[in-house]
Length: 420
Image (cartoon, rainbow, N blue to C red; front, side, top):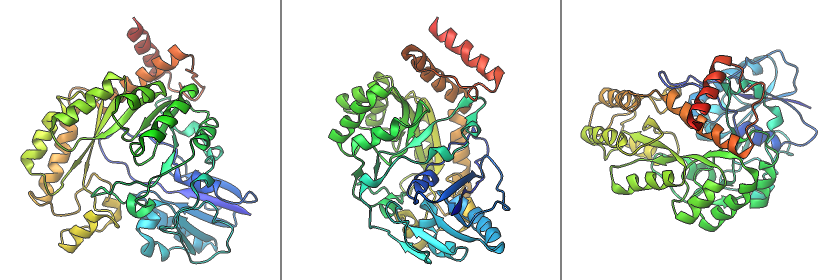
């Protein structure tokens, strides 16, 4: 059986550094398919879809709301050619009813151990989670790795060590998608998969690693011999956790910056004290934010020595409390899912006009990066990680890594300058 798996493209936000990471969801899903299935994979963000490719079945894996309209169009084209199409992924679950109109089958939930059944219209496993130990190594062999670099520098591979989240943040759909129970993979299983990943640089995509201190410490201890360099969402800032994370190769972490408190300032400093970089994630447009609050927050960011900052405006994704509250109050005025990209205001803020919030979002990006561009700040982080790799003897520049010779020379010059 020939199965064509597709990850639809989406429009990137203007003005931000554009690079493409290998998508995680499709290759995790592919690992759950029976061994007799012959899989080909197209990430439309880096290559065109061949609609004439011979296949028995088509799968469309969607993560973002901004992908769904393109995913539907892809499915419509294949179905017009007589192909059966199944949808899965995060945004399939968030937009299930609309997606059914474009599908022969829709898969909702997690796929492990559930792909042997005969075709039916809806596979609904929402809230019924498989044994987490069934999660095996993702099918990274499906990637065309040479397509995932930015100006010659190899991007990170994606990996997850847990599912679910015991937190229930206002704008987040994770509690709907993966449940409120934290479900860590057995550490041995995680290490087994990490050992199969050729790329030395990783993005650990777990919703939060800061959910179980003992598991967190056990994972980091086991990762130390692998000498990987990794990015993740929040980790605990306890000294024993930060020390192990640094030894395990923590490169930088995402940290939500939601106010101007000393707590945030000290937390960023603690990360830096252990050599771990910080990318602040700043959400604008919550009901407790006035225009003055947002301006103060932007000024505060310039004081706390962030390595990077990522600004978003509240996007009320379906199946979140934000969506329910704003829809109930008739404050959502735009239901074009292409606009749900965390950079476009689609609702009426409480304390300002939508136009003013959009201006403040753009002002935040321009102000934080006025002296050094986002790309320059990212380059400094990449230089640091390359230095660590060289010191540890793990720096392995592949032919694909320094495709852009001028950028490669810039990297080498910066490394040499830093070493001096």
